[in-house]
Image (tube, rainbow over all chains, first blue to last red; front, top):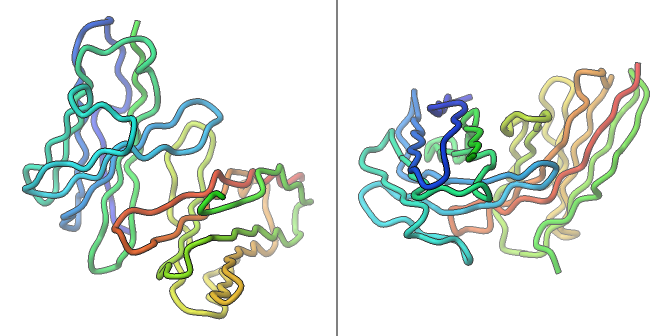
Length: 115
Length: 110
């Protein structure tokens, strides 16, 4: 299957700081990428859909000014958690849609801990 | 009503047995269906995709789709302890994004 990378794999930051997470499709072009959040023992929650060259579409209840998404190229999307607080601590996972295969592949995830 | 439903489990099977995981969905217009495996603390991994009615086999895995009854299933033959994970059913309803079920936890005992 196609490979999606995420960086960093984990990050610890102080409350009030901003954290940027990168998601890259390594061997295919992804016009659409998705950002999910998963709390312990809970299911995946879609936060937003990121389309290359256009604004992201956020799910209901997700603050677009807090979770900034940029999809500047066909292989890179970034999620910036602005002014992070302890309740933002979670496992953030991106996925990328391979148009040719019509399949969605996940990155390894980023574990964010906000102190 | 949830769009994609799965029994949360756990489903316990002995090593070597067949594990049967089921999923129902509500949108009749759904076009493509996927099974992901997620180990604890890891991200989901795509294991099967299916697009038309019937069975699709890949190694020890068989996906089954019945659009008339709106269900998808995943059979794992010769289950191994390493198959112990949460299995997520996902459905593409035609709006790019996948709708996920909450997952079924599978436990394979040695």
